[in-house]
Image (cartoon, rainbow, N blue to C red; front, side, top):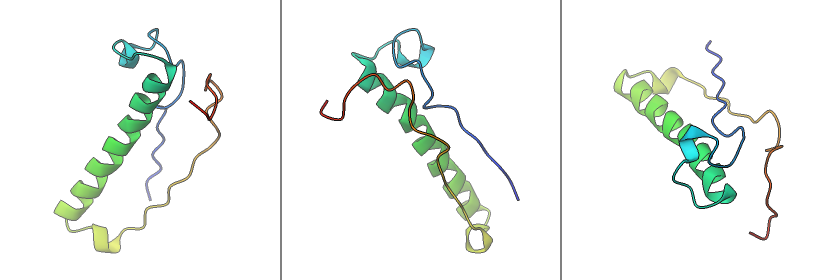
Length: 76
């Protein structure tokens, strides 16, 4: 068993976060940070497949909370 935690989508969602220096706004920054987790999962699944471990692996994914620093409405 392995427990992996990511913090990539935690705030701040502005240019003070080094990952978001080229983001146009808070929403772009948030999407960019969430994408890091997507890329990580892609790499993990590819590696499990390459090592022929995917057939014997169960991935359980869950979130621990909402984006508390999410400063924009759902309509944006």
